[in-house]
Amino acid sequence: MSVDVGAASADVYVAGKKVSAGRQVVRNPARISEVVGHVALGTAAHVDAAVTAATGAAPLWADMRASDRADSLEAAAVVLTSRIDSLAELLTREQGKTLWEARADVAGAVSVLRYYADLSRALDTDEVFRSDERGTICSGRRPIGVAGVIVPWNSPAYLGFLAIAPALAGGNTVVVKPSELAPLALSELASTLADCLPPGVLSVVPGAGEPGAALAAHPQVRKILFTGSTETGRSIMRAAAGTLKNLSLELGGNDAAVVLESATISDELVTELMLGTFAISGQVCFSVKRIYVHRSHWTTLVEKYCDAVDRLVVGNGLDPSVSMGPLNNRRQYERVQGLLTDAQDRGADVRALGRKADEASWPEGYFLLPHVVTGLPDSAPLVAEEQFGPAVPIIAFDHDDEAVAAANGTEFGLAASVWSDDDAHAMSVARRLQCGTVFRNVHRAGASDVTMPFGGVKQSGIGRMHGLAALEACTELQIVANYQDVTHLSRPPWAGD
Ligand code: NAD
Image 1 (cartoon, rainbow, N blue to C red):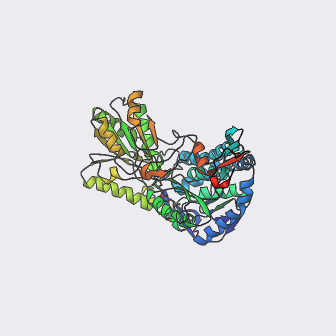
Image 2 (cartoon, rainbow, N blue to C red):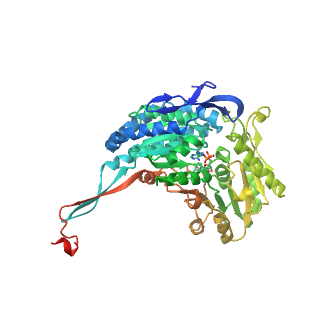
Image 3 (spheres, rainbow, N blue to C red):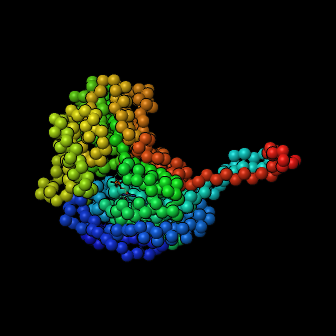
């Protein structure tokens, strides 16, 4: 089913009802003149209404058996499955990514919902960790309360559901705040899910910064799951400090790929390295953002890598011949252009590669060819900062220590990769990299599946999402000390025997 141009709408949706709000247009980054739909500009008042509804619904949802909640979420997943294809097309129009990438985003969201529904059934059983003649001590995981989920624009459906699903499955009620830059598919998925649940269990408040900041500061919100930039993460932490909220922060990265002397520069390696860099036009939190290569491989790697990148076709993501869509928004487009201009001004070798799918429509969107840059020092902004776009620096090193120091020489610590034929060599370097995930001979979405805890160290985040870790992050550990006999506990002398 194709989506009517301009018909889609991301509304404030509270307790099963649309709430009126100011709104702005959502444009297609591949054809900026095309209005894909409208997004409500939620305010602090909308957040307050949604949180009030979530607080009202919390006892009912929290007191249900986990397996009954799981049944509702699994039934909702069946409804959402029928929407995957139409919402994938909508996502390509609002976000820019290719249809293949958009389908993975939306289908991934639905499979995450199923995964957490299933995983959460175990919450019905408390664990006994000590049982003797004195009594039994049990532990169980309990809901935290109202959770605020704040989502970025790069993979909105998948990243939104990576937080919504464990939060709901853990027995929390949720208010989700999609990004104003790609709100349509996620809002549609979330409001459809909300309709399958008791009113108030899930509400949607799209908008710019205001509703996000209001969630972070709201006294009745106990948990924030935020995915986005490190800068906004800091601001959320400040706002959340007032009521000491439980925080999960998935933030920016500047991932290094380290190609060791023990690697073979095969076609397979080069293809994987290219996919890890340019998927979603480089707008992935754990894209390869810097490549360090042992000097013995420099010439071969740069040559073969540039050949692989040169095969990319850039254009409208709905065109099946296209392998890379536009950047999502003007700010991001200008930022990456600025980094490339800076690299040029520093005398670096800046190569624009790939080809345009359609020369005539090129000026209509935020299109940028994939760029490979050599000759930059580690201090140059394209190396030192998160570019979040299709431009990657390649830097030579002579010793592993040098590569490890460069890879770690940043306040980011999301992911990294080592490329090598030698298991022991790869592992020895991997252990020294300061980041939440190290891949070997791969570095892209899909290689970090939903069962693998994922998150950053240093200023790339706090906590882990994916897997059991996310369900734990969305619940509190409660101990029930069920003593039959307390005479073994020591008492102060004045209390008597
Ligand atoms: P962003 O921080 O600008 O926005 C993220 C969300 O926060 C949006 O919904 C935005 O409206 C909202 N927001 C803005 N100001 C706010 C405030 N003061 N308080 C609360 N919420 C506020 O990030 P972005 O540009 O949407 O996304 C790109 C960034 O996200 C990159 O840095 C990328 O690395 C990071 N990211 C990280 C992960 C991860 O898992 N670690 C995944 C995807 C993206």
